[in-house]
Amino acid sequence: MKVWVCATCGNHSATDAACLICADERQWVPRTGQRWTTLAELAGEGHGPDVRPLEPGLTGIGTTPAFAIGQRSVLVQTVSGNLLWDPSGYIDPAAVDAARSLGGVRYVTASHPHFYGSMGMWQREFDATVLVPEADASWLTALGVVTSFTPWSSRLEVLPGVTLVQCGGHFPGSAVVHCASAASGAGALLSGDTIMVTPGEDRATFSWSVPNLLPMSAAPVRGVWEAVRSLPFDRVYGGWWNRVLYSDAKGIVERSVERYLEHLRGEAAPPSALCQRFASLSHYCGHDSRNNNHRGPSLRTFFRKLLTVGGAAAAAGGLVLSTTAPALADTTDVYVQKAYLGKSGCNVYLTAVEGHNYASLMYNNVHAGVTCYAQLERSTNHGKTWSRVSGYDAIGSRAGTTTLAKTYSYYAGGGDEVRGCLTVKGGTSCTTAVALSGGSGVPAQEALSPSYLHEVAADGACQEAVVSTSATKSSTATGSAVFLNQSSGHTCVGWLERTKNNGKTWYVESGTHSAGSVSGATTYAITATYQDGSSYKVRACVRYSNTSAKHCTAGW
Ligand SMILES: [Zn+2]
Ligand SMILES: [Zn+2]
Image 1 (cartoon, rainbow, N blue to C red):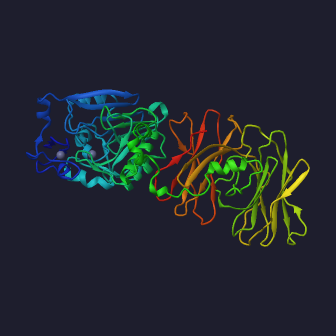
Image 2 (image 1 turned 135 degrees about the horizontal axis):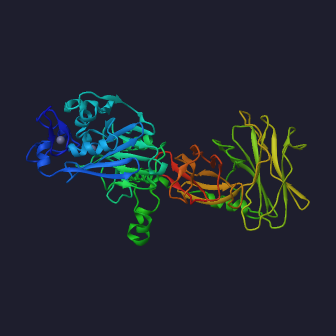
Image 3 (image 1 turned 90 degrees about the vertical axis):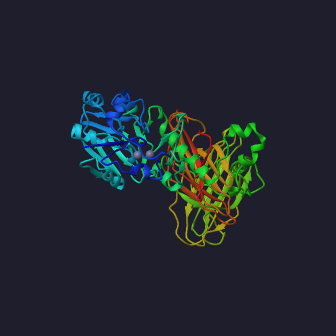
């Protein structure tokens, strides 16, 4: 078969009519017109293979001097056979011998049509199976150099631990290869330009057309991330020798996606170092107008109020506290505080869910040296007599730390009245009573553990905090995320993240939870509790429901 090689994109073609790859808006044709060459011509110009081991099981096979788009292919070697990825347009007997000495080629495939290169010749040399995403198969057929191929879509484990993953974006079938055992078992992606590693090898970007500098829009960028986010990987080999994210690649890709989307939305503030250095940038560096609702107490103020001895003002809302991992995961409730009492360093808060028939009691102690007792009481005769329905529980003082609260939830029929009572040093005080509504309730949750506040942050009206059931870090410490929404127009979505490498990489640990806006009320939500090793950290993150930019506390 006579094969023409496009001098611009390196693809092989059965005809020397216009190169259909280069005629597409994502590529380009030289001003002087389409130019074809041949493998013999290229060999005569001094091109040859450039074979370099990348790491055990992965060998790069490029061309020197580089040719056309200049990608370096990767031979993925396994005991069950090898996969050749993104073959260069240049192939010669030395390149074939090199591949043969490494175990040959059982499968050949590419990230997308720009990198089909010499795929047809590799197929013939090794009787290899050509794999092409169904969505892009018509490009390969039109080039006319591959005799047969196997279409695939979504995901395909080609060889044990070697999985093709369709990501879309640059082309509908744009793909990556996941190599599970690469990067010393942490996993690696071969990304071509599906995920484009940048020249500094410290971030990634996304492009609908690389040479014509046309951006990828938001939805396909999110689609690329969604396609790979469930895969473990610490390394990304881009399509060229010097385009590699050697470690923390997954964190880098995630952060790069967020940053890219911020730029698309026009919300990319300069990095904070620049903000500190140049006062003139301040209007870019503050919160933007979408977060313009700053009314009401901050979460820190709220927790501070919980700590205020005999505080005069009512705290702004209630709080559901967690027990052990992963209790109360996916709990999202609207609490409205109905009454408050402070006495001698002990405070009690009664909260009730509007439209529901249960109430919670929460109390804290900031007094050094005094133990408080609290209980939830119920009346079924409009307050003539009261009976204790919760435990009678002590909460000791912890000087210098935040002894937040202990809660009980009480489930009662509509019309029942409840109140919280506090006993300290022989005296007892109770909150005003709340009459519960009818409606669906939740079961009682008694004897919950005290919680401690650690990290607090806010992104406008969305505020987030990390609380835990222990005051200090330990191998059995737990972390929970709590969210507060004081916006009247947006829902805050929050979740808990953890890191195992001191913040280099963060993983989403919980589900996402919404704290909706409720006129006249303060909305709380809480995530799963995470059992945290002493060397790990957790953080709480939020975003507004109408954006995808996230904001997190510091790690604890
Ligand atoms: Zn071309
Ligand atoms: Zn491309």
